[in-house]
Length: 131
Image 1: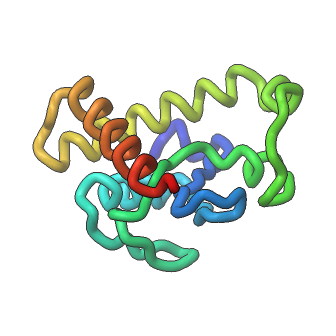
Image 2: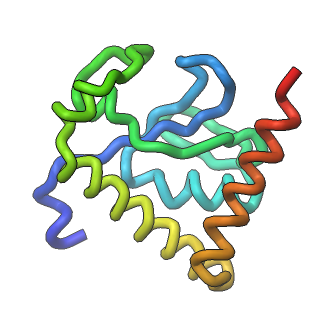
């Protein structure tokens, strides 16, 4: 972990449904396992419980937990200003780096194809849940 060990812990939402509170919150130590489960469809055993990778709709930064805001609070434009571009960018870089690590572990699909593949799976899942 080296230089990251003195930095603030990052938190992520594993979206498993369509409600505002339909997610598990994880910290950065569980992100690789969650992404691997989403890509492979296998079960991830996390601190807050287990989740099947087949039902993971998205994995995104959990800014609410990071900032100490209520779990179901919906962020507004000014909240992103308070977060700051530096923090938002640090999350983007962390997710990108973790995606690349998982990608390499799973056989090294080129990054662009890997990202597109996840996006298409999420779109298909979302479309299948629409009424």
